[in-house]
Structure formats: C-alpha cells, structure tokens
Image: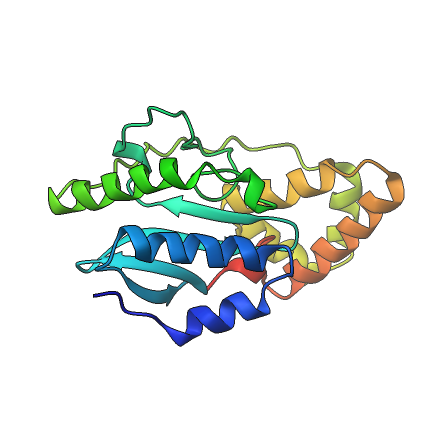
Length: 203
C-alpha cells in the first residue's frame, strides 16, 4: 500500500509553476505503477522508497526539473532514455522543463516496474570509479581578489580540488568581463564565509 508524505505535497506547492505539473505527473505515475512505494524527503528532495530502499527521486530547480532512477546504472535501457554519465543534468532523464520532455507514460511505467523487479532481486547500483580531479590554474584576477581577503584566501587554499574546480569553472564560464568580476566578488564573499560554490544545495 502506498504511503504519502505531506512534505512532498508542500515541496510541490513551493515549486515553480512550470514544475508543478511535471512533479505531480511523475508522483502519480510512480504510485500507479509501484503500489508499495513509500514517500519521504532526503537531502531536501522527494524520494520514493521500496522495501526500505530508494528507487526514485525528483527535484525542481529554477528552470528545470530532474527525475532519477537509483538503479539506472544497472537497468536495461532499450529506449535509450537514461543518462548515467556524470556530465548529464541531475537525474536520469536530463533537463525536464515541461511534460513534453518526459518519455511516454508507457515507457516510464516499464522502467519503473523494472526498478521494482531489480530491487526484489537484491540488485545494487554500480558506482563509477571516481576519477582524480585535475588542478586548474587560478586566473590572475581571482588571485588578486583573494590577496585582498585573507580569510577567503585561506579557505580557498584548504578547499579540496573539486571545490576549487567548481569555483574556477563558474568564473571562467562568464561571457562578459562585468559578469566575471561579479562572480569573482561573489566567490570571495562566499569563500570568506567558508562556503563552497554549491553551498545552497548541500545538506
């Protein structure tokens, strides 16, 4: 018997208007295909557990939604809908901005039932080997800004390579000089507070 969580209702209500129909549709489809699902909230996102194991999760952001199959790495993918590489958008279906971006209900139902079957068989996801993060050169304008803020400079120096890379890529991706300058100023401010680039999404 499905177990609903009022926190998921609240999450959907807080989501942007474009996201609510997507989240509602995915939620309804999960319960229709997987009647023993239990809803919960983990890492501030709705998750759907089956016999104590997470099977699905969904999330809404400013401009897109995401949906994930926890067992995507071991699922068969005859329709080619699963994104499992680390560069894809969060989740297994890429960026979802409207219902039209989703696979058909029939296809999603097949994949959801496959997830349940794999869980019943005790199959576990395959974790990709973590690749070492290559250090990037710190641009001169960021070095100059850090030199003016000792606390930020110390925090940046203590960051793991992956955290430094997140800031560097964000700054280097700026198309205009004024955008780059604003990002550097924001980065220094956050680093002085001990924050990583994606601190808003950390638990």
